[in-house]
Length: 264
Ligand SMILES: Nc1ncnc2c1ncn2[C@@H]1O[C@H](COP(=O)(O)OP(=O)(O)OP(=O)(O)O)[C@@H](O)[C@H]1O
Ligand SMILES: [Mg+2]
Image (cartoon, rainbow, N blue to C red):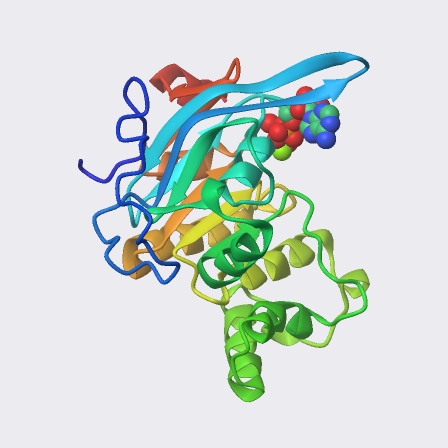
């Protein structure tokens, strides 16, 4: 495989757990595994006595150090898919692996630990803690991972400078603009250097310049730091920077055709 993201070909090859039970959370011995693999993912929501089928069989594989953009109309299931990829929600059927570790096999506690150690998530609606400052919000993942307080503070400030908020460390979310809040959320997601960053419309609230800066940052994370980034977006410029683009349509993913990239 060339590392480019792609929908998995055919039925989930190797779905019978490739590396077996001795895989450990630390990720040892999983270097050859894709950063993210999803096989046969289905998800529906019960609504008014009926079932709303959102995902009906998603198969995809994302190589390490790549940036995958997922496009799709509003309501096509992009957020649902990212939540399942990040272990924030469980599929009705199908399996998810991150770096060879099967997420869908973990219990709630192990899942929470795995998420804190190895995943970063930027939510569509940023979910910052209102009573904490920007700096404290970004310190949260380091504190959860029980890193030393001084180091956590220094690293959080460094990442806030990186996203252009070095002058806003002490502001609470209500004292920040929408775009600034979104950048704090990005800083919080990348502060622990996650191997897989899942970002749901991260540039949705940003003006052109700040969106471009954020896109550059996402590309750099993938290209220079070997992190894998999966981003749901409506933004053509971000899609054009991605190493692969998939479209969520009718509950499944397929490769984007050039026309879709140009006409969006
Ligand atoms: N908890 C829920 N209960 C019922 N239906 C839900 C629930 N969450 C999502 N849905 C429905 O599932 C569909 C997919 O939602 P999702 O948020 O994944 O879409 P999306 O592609 O992220 O859209 P957008 O681009 O607007 O963010 C939508 O039609 C939505 O109404
Ligand atoms: Mg969404």
